[in-house]
Length: 445
Image (cartoon, rainbow, N blue to C red):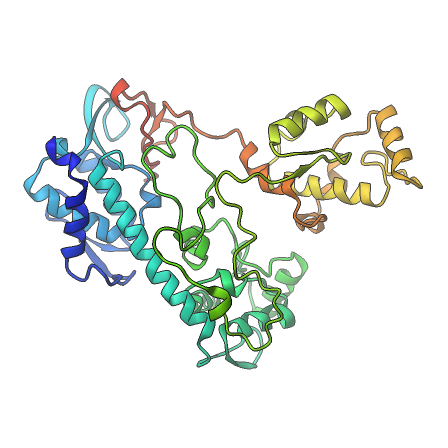
């Protein structure tokens, strides 16, 4: 496998490929199977293509959702596999099951992942290519004054900067889409939102309503005038998602949170957003230098729920709350989801700010009296669900609350690193020692 060490060949091959410096369209791109003559049209047939590779050719592409420009990635490997077998590039695995999930001894499968230097260089190159195009488009959208579009909710036509349009949506209709300095491909995002509204779909919960007034009233009452952050289709519109660090084995044992990254412009492109964000009414308060982004390795301050104690690690803070206040935060919130934990934190913050006990709601004249009462009565808890399970507690009560930033890391539903899940969520197989550290993509057919 001498070719596996020639990482420079991968870069050269990509650079010399047709239209390598121009991003291909994201719709209606024909992609041929890596091993047979079957053709898939991306992005509509993306899942069918990946399922076909697994079912027919027993090939799994690791971390496929993290691959930038998947179409070009598959087209590159299709050319490579015309003259080479899977064994020359892929990790061979032996699983005790067939592709349909039934039992069979030592069935051979192939894993294509970035442990291979050529694959790593390819992924990195495509990521940089996508990032560069996004930065160019982002700079254009921040400065272009030829934009003109009718409001999604009223008859007003907004002309000038796209930032003015987004400000109108928020100021006049309380629709929160995102800060213009952190968005890209804004025109496509607005078209998607308009399409959903025309279908009478709520932008957040995506329920369908009988008419537009009912939809608007629902979004107003439920606080759903914002996009759903869990929908992957919105990822392409946020610039933070274009520069997730790519490094071999960086995600094998300790997967990083989805939006950890290094600063845009590092190593390849440098853009002065303060210079190019030529907004006439700018008051200097826009965080266009992205100073609010926490870089890898930086620690945030996490304040205790019940006192002024601060820690830089969530584990240390949980130990403090257990020892000093008798609250086992992990046990108290183990049955709750991420959003419910958000509500609890904001509820407790508000109660203490109002000098009220979290559990019995008694009000005191000073914090010392309140703290003494809660300690004596063992009321350092999370309170009754009826008190905190309200939409108003979705919103942070304390500015820059570090505790809200680490709650998502506490979920205990991650699959063990030595377990492979293929097609069926109930069908788990142990991989052999040579591949036990590799992470496979989950498939849902």
